[in-house]
Image (cartoon, rainbow, N blue to C red; front, side, top):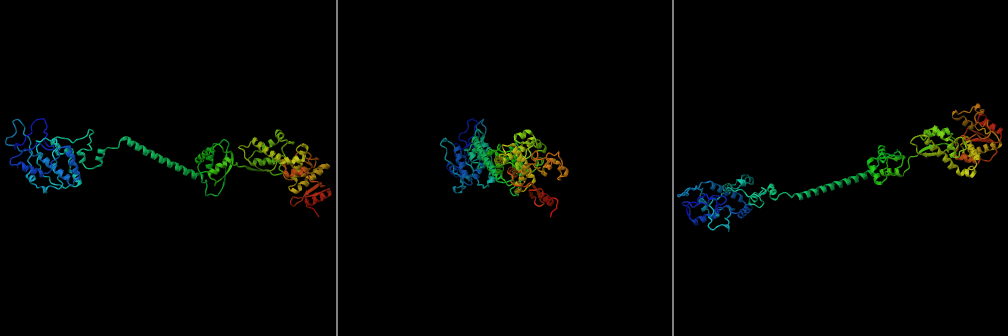
Length: 562
């Protein structure tokens, strides 16, 4: 081999024996050591850069696993860059005619050749064996100066390390780093392995999860979230329902009763709103949902209901469906004439007095109930009634109430009249009812009713005048002021004046109670023809003669006596 340096030719074919990071192989300069000495220097010189990809990968792995390798590699790169930039001295012969002068590398320093093996850096690699595919006449790798070991911190290494595109060897050889078609470095390339770990590099090398898998994961999380929300909603609804159904509207208040009217045709929503407004329930919507759950929205009754403030919603609904509406009390005392009954009816809100009067004098109404008088007087049975109030006080309401009173009379007297044979004898019926009304007005003492009935029966049998003051009062009607005057006793125009007209009056003077009717149907048998009320307790003194009677009158009525 010639001692002159090998010049670069203009041939377009690349030199197969040229190192990727250097120029042409240097020739032996004047005064250079012989081949054995050069071989020895090469043996102890720093390792040259790897020539193939396999060697580069092995080099990179060793570099990552061996401490201090990065610094040594960087030093080598700097030395190689310096060797490439130093101009090569020309030989005495010079280049051939017409050929441009080639840049030659300077020979390796003697210090590198003379460095003993023991003085090498701890982490310096030995030169790898030559590739099997390399030709036998390939020149040896150029001698390079030994790199100094530089200790750098991790931040300094990352700051001072040149980018792969700007590496001196790539610039000198005109090579670019290997990249895949996508523009990202290959995960298995040496360039990718020598950069160290970073999240960005990891994402570039391994890539993001594929879209189908990511979509499935998102869908799974969405379904899981929806299920949790649904479960939470169901739990909250169950808690609210349990609290509503088990908590009265006024749990800590004293028990009170509240009346709420349910009109016919009201929807359940209106009823629930009315109950909430009255303080019976706490939530109209919840109450409606509960009724729908129980299937009771169409089963409630119309009327006025009385609710307790300590009832829970279940008790309230049960009362609406199965309970009885509020029944208002209507009390008709024994011995009241029809006009006083009409006044009570109107005062309690069941019908107007005028409508009631018209109904009880209606011939059609009287015929329906087999009443043999000009009015229903005597058949308006006195009792305490519990009734629903009508929506409107009109004639229909009055008719309904009159039907109820007369119907009660028939029901109460059925057995009594059947026993006395009154039900089949209209004349007897008239006598009993008129006599019973007179008894009712004369006495309120139970033990005297039979005696008073016997007196009237005896006088009637004997053809005597009844001389009953209450009959005169009834004939005076609503204009009576509480005092009977002499002219009232002498008034022949009053058909109910039993002081002037013999026999019984034309009709009952009040609606008697069952006890007075029973006394009239079964009067006591005695010979009394007179009686007079005492001043104490309303009791009466009964006498058989007029003389004894006048003495009693003088004693108790005129405050005379002996």
